Structure formats: structure tokens, C-alpha cells
Length: 554
Image 1 (tube, helix red, strand yellow):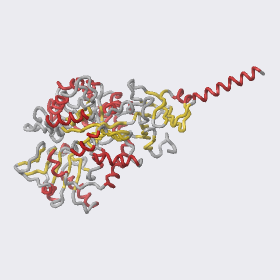
Image 2: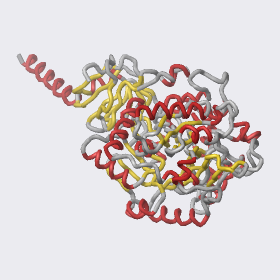
Image 3: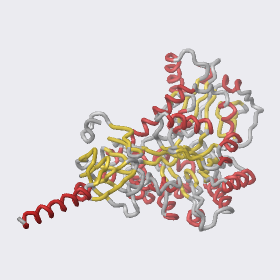
Image 4: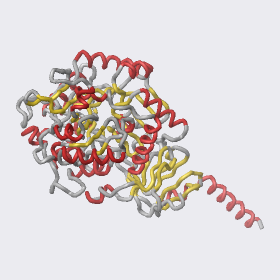
């Protein structure tokens, strides 16, 4: 009898002990391939979530014994990666513009006219035509267009068509008249193109502002609809956080209003557009931090784009011997901004594409940065770099923020612009090696919002058709581990949020995505067909693919 009582006592202790071990989680994912993107690039098979945090991560057998969960999900070998951080895009800016006619892929002005005519049949009451996406490098002659056909077909309605990079535009005469642009008009740091003393309609960089102030504002309801549509698109790719490369105070307040009613869930790290209202209402009030909306960076522009020959080079363009591009800042302006940012603990992020622009900005940065600073100032794009400047990224701890897809988009014509300087362009591996950090973004809408074609460009130096064979300047390819961290952890570091985001580790925010392909073992073609099965932010499923076999019933 005593032995039986002793046996019951031991059994009770064992049961009580097992109850203590089996702790409660909200979600338990197991039997998957989970890329943590942590410092060791660990790959595990299981992860437990409670509330908005990761509470455990490791092998499936251990976690299944350790955790009870409200929802236990057998991943069946499917892949999880950290939520993707798009380190440079214009999602909010694109959403708050008048909806443009899509001119992507047109082969000439005649195709622009066709798309405008189709649009006008659907919107006959339009009083201003706005389009975006043309690229003269796709035209048969690869020359910048003129507005003669626009004037012929649309003599009375203003037409304003932005180039794909957003740094040049084609305007018809009606739009030029609206803005009072004549052959005598001049603007600092901008080009109003004239050929044979006649306006062509081409405007570059600051000259574009003369017309853009006349673009009709988007109604708030339409703005909200566009924002929510693009948020959903981001979730479908597994993007959980964006760096908005230029945001205004009114858009910050609008996002906050949507966040308060639980409609906005995408994390936004805002780079403030520089103007007096934004400085007074946001910057001088200190870091703006309201849950998922954080603003602590200022966006500067030092030059234009390579495609429109506005990027600032030390030597003239190889295909335009009288042009070195445009530099858009003065040192006095920069010093004033830099001192303001340091005083209010704001980061500086500067658009710099040409080698002269990058050199100049590093030189100006160096006045404020020593080799022990933690200001995390950034240079956006970094497309062409003087060989002597690479090591300065490490010397001053400057973060390179790049878009690998640009190398693939530009490869057919970039050498004609740069000549031998192409050897120092799109050198992402060399940039990474300076600080062991590189932040990766899409630059949407200049390029698609799809992060997996960006990943393909980074690791294969190819497009999703595996072109070109062997890759474009393949010696500058990033490893898959670095590219994944560039889209996750390094993006978080560039945002001062690496302690909360960017990798799948205990105690961090439960931002992650279940994807249909194992991107670390995928071909370019498979990367082109990669998408989210489910996207989670703060442990909440914000997107679920209809009909998926992993999350049945959600």
C-alpha cells in the first residue's frame, strides 16, 4: 500500500512538472524551414509566438514538448523569413499623387499617346493628364522624346508625363503655358531643354517643380483608398516595414489617423521631405514615434538620375560630352540641415547616384562623422563611386542603401553613359565589405515593389529570366545570406530598430512571412514567382493567401 501511494505521489509530481513545462503560446509553427537572419544565419524548424513577440525558436521536437498553443501550424516544410523591410521606396508619395497613367514599357511617344487616349475614353472629364513610367532607353533611337505628338493630339489639355526615375518629365505646350514656362525661363539646379532654341517639353530635376504645383490634388478619400490598396500589395509580398524616402507632415498625420482605427498596420520609417512646414511641425518637435509610424530621418537630394543624365559625375557623360549632370545642394544648405538634424537626433539620408555626388556628400558628411559615431547617416542609391571613396563608407560608418534591381534595369545602356566607369558602378559587394552592412530597397514606383526580383538581382545579378548568362558584373553579387539580411536585419539597423525588428529571435517583434518558395535555394525563375502565403506583424496575421494549404480556415 505504501509503495502504491509512493507511486501515485511520484506520478502526481511528474504531471505537475509537465504542466509547468507546457507553457501557453498563441501560435506555434513547426516542421518548417525558418531562416532567422540572425548574426549566425541560423536555420530552425519551429517558432512560438505570444502577443506581439517571439517567445521561442528552435527545433520542432523541443518546441512541441515545451509549448501549448491556441494555433498549432504544421508548415509541412514551407519557408518562413523575417518580415521584409523595404529600405527605400515611395509608397506613400505614390499613393498621395494624382493617379498616373501607366507608361511602363512604352516604345515611343506614339504609344504614350495611345495610352492617354484610352485613359481619356474612360475619364472624359479630366482637365489635367498625368502619367509616369516611360524610359527613352527602350525607344528605338534611345533619345529623349519631344512633345510634338502630344501637342498634335492634346493641344488644349495639359499633359505631364514623368520618366520612370521621377527625375525627368515630358510636358506638352499646354502644360508649359499653364506654368508660364518660356524659352527665357531659367531655374536653378534644373534643365528646361531647348533644341535649336525651341522648347522640347523635357524638364529635368528642379525644372519639374514648375509644373508639378499645378497637378490637381488627390481627394482625401481617393488618397486613403490608394494607401490601403498599396498596403495590401506590400503584405502580399511579405513587406512588413518600409522606409518612405520623402514624407510630408500631412501624410504622417493621415497615416496616424488610419492607424488609430486599425486600418494602417504597415510599419513606416519616414524620411522627412525638407521644407519649412515639415521642419517646424515634425523635425523640431523631436523624433516622431507613434507605434508603427516613426520619423527620425531627413531626405536630401544631391543629384538627379543616370537614365536622364542628371546624376552628377566628375567627368562628362560618355554619350554627352558637354554634360556632367546636376548637383542640387550647396554646402551652406547642407551644413544648416546637418546641424539641425544633429540637434534633434535625426538621421540624414541623401540621394546620390553619380560619383561626384557621392564624393561630395561623403566629404560633407565627414565634417560631422568620426569613426566612432552612431548617427547612421545614409547614402541612397550609391550607383557610381570613385574607387577612392569606397573605404570612406567604413571610415565614417556611412550606411549604403541600394536597389540591386537597378543594376539589371540599367545594364543595357549604363555603359554608354559611363564608359569605363561602369567598373565602379553597382558595386554592392564592395560597399558591403566596408561596414559589413548594406540596406536593400525597391525604390518603388521607379522599380516594382516585388522584393524577390530584387533578391534575384542581388545574388544572381540577373533578371528572373536568368538573363544575362553568368550575370551582369557577377563579381559584385551578394551572398544569399547577406542579401536576406540586407532585406531584413540591415534595414532594421538603418532604422535604429534592430533590437526589435529584422531577425527572428526571442524577444523581438513577431514580424515574419510564410512564403511559397525557399528563396535561399530558388532559381531566378522561381524567385519571379515567389509571394506570401501569410504575413504577420506584431503577431497578427495581416494577410493570408486564399485557398492556401498551410493556414486552412484563416
